[in-house]
Length: 164
Image 1: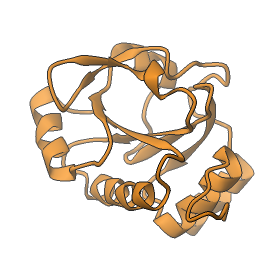
Image 2: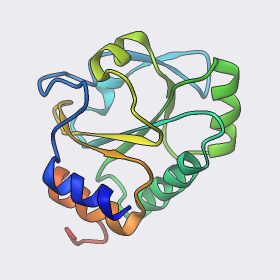
Image 3: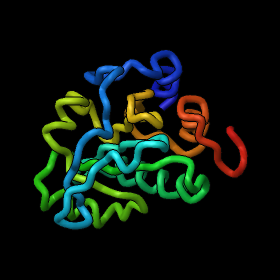
């Protein structure tokens, strides 16, 4: 985990397969909460954490729980989005019910996969700025006490009245 944090500090915006000008919120994704599709443009204006998960991923479960807690401590400061990948819709729905995110969850689309490129591992989190542009990435599980300072530095997210 220490190597992860070092690489984040050295390469905070070098995204594998994602062009720096890619508008990551200019698309619709199919919701895992129902059959509808939703436009991601509604999340523009807030920093977004797009966490990719897959079925049977215990580290994804831990990352979603961490984001649930961080979202409760930082209301209105950022918008997490869960995106299911590497599984059929049925498996992603089962994982969504197990994860119980306190934020929207979607199924990956071909358009998003084209913009992001391959997902190197899960959990994989893209940091997206207020304009929908990539601002960095996190690979693997990152605990809340390490995630909060990254969000403050990269996305100007403040929690508990502090920018720590």
